[in-house]
Amino acid sequence: MKITTMLLIAALSTASTAALGADAISAADFAKKAGAAGAAEVEMGKLGAQKATDAQVKAFAQKMVTDHTKANKELMAAAKSKGLEVPTEPGLMHKGMKEKFEAQEADRDFNHDFMQQMVRDHEATVELFQTAANDSTLDPDLRALAKKTLPTLEQHLADAQKLEAKFAKK
Image (cartoon, one colour):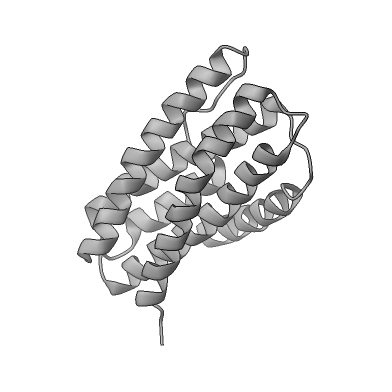
């Protein structure tokens, strides 16, 4: 049952990620999606730092905790001044993914699967922040925050892709 639920959640997430490709995003949507994504990265980073068996994966996971905690605080401050709510917990899909990773053996497969998820998460987050950074109708402070954060997210994605390739299943 859990696998079926997780597959449904993943399918819904893919559909919502595709919807992010729009040219504009509301301030409320950006705060909601960025907050949930940031909270997910912190949670997943803590888990990866704890369970990964590879030193590079552990270091990457700890970097996720550090960088996304900082970005989350900046988002909270910017959103608070606008009266916007920012989630402090990951969304349902990420809660399901965390549950899967908690139950998974800490081995080479964990390292690969974890990094594969980091690639997926960062692809969606980069797309979200690109949309926000390029949306001239978005609140200027949130747009500036998106532009400021985007290079870090793009670096996370590049690092995640390199590590995921290192553990690619053959």
